Length: 586
Image 1 (cartoon, one colour):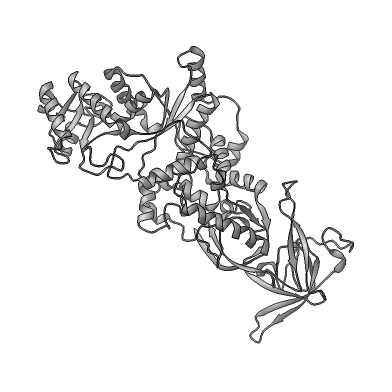
Image 2: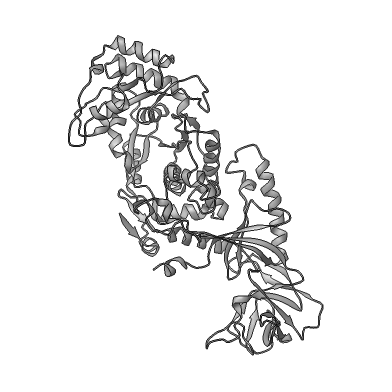
């Protein structure tokens, strides 16, 4: 597996076509297809993760680029693991990423047709009912170096197989008592062609068809036929499906149906994450995280809650490109894309996490309202009012009683500028009887007001602050990577042993400027309205997806969390201002 750094990927961006685009262009140029039709076929047994985002962007992106369309088809052939909750979450994630599908379809839409396909294979002598147990079938299949062997059921007559398969459909047998297998080649070097199971018995309630069916097609049987039914021109899968392609082609050939073609690309593997739905479900069920949308999860719903933008994820997928071999992408590249976008759109606000009070002794006014820019990257961003008063909070870490050389923050006798305000000087450190600092007495330079500074004083340090009288309390959640191991999938032992104990740190009470509270309060109303809505949004339903992003000056990028209440607003850190993880963990 190859690990590429974020810088190398950014520097090596090419405008040339990827191999899938070359295939599509050749098919269109030759007249093989007049219009392409792709599909995104998730199984509704969990929430989508960042790996699915690559597939979504690829399938929908190809169709969009070449004037085609994409179907959203749910592979709902296993009623035991599937749920409408997952269906709804998948639809919302696709819409949030910015894509609309041509048709919303389900493999269960084709259960009757797939059943007829199975009957057709039996009629043609290409399928048989097997009474063997799963253990017996596994033994009969042999090994990669040893061919499989035929069993006595393989030679059943067509009439007998038709009778037994009909009885299976009618519910006359228990789960596992019989299966329908394709009759291909028990000596094939591809073990997936050694008479694979194409139907099994499952007496389970299906989320869409209820109890109508008690036999369900296997993925390898349903997938290609569903593509064919829909006239999918380019069925794009990840590399692990390369060995499945012969079965895909065999079914289409033997049934004589529309010849959809399967193509494979390298799936997304990313550092410090897991992409397995089974492992993600384990994290949820064992309460290592707070649900599928926990902001530390690699799920799209978790990233959305954390404050990642769909634009940044699409850009990330564009940067990593489409390859034919596996590689390991650095999580820092995704964070880079998020920072790049948030820097352009995030509103700047001042929040003090760990307050140290300052009393400006020579400030006689009762207070005033200053102006501060909303976003220096946006020429139309405008300004916001920021209240200033005699008492303010700064961060404790921005003061040192005994400061080293080249320390440009606040220290006794030293001056700094307050962001969008004045230059102040520390005159006195006030302590209690136990020697703890209670506050600092400072003086300000009246002529140093930002925007009209005539003091002639130059200082190197600028600090953020909030007015004590106007500051409002908020809760801050600082999220980081969920795992400490770079390549979790390849690490030895239980993957959960690599969970980062510092992946979430909570600051119960931080102090924010009032403009942040005002805007976030309005957004809280939207959040509550969204939670009450009983429909899946569309791309055009933009109000549903609006989430304000903020840069807390000198602290990072943040967004409002759904746990917020009118009494306490909660903000999630989306990403730090700079990539500090790589330096710390070298």
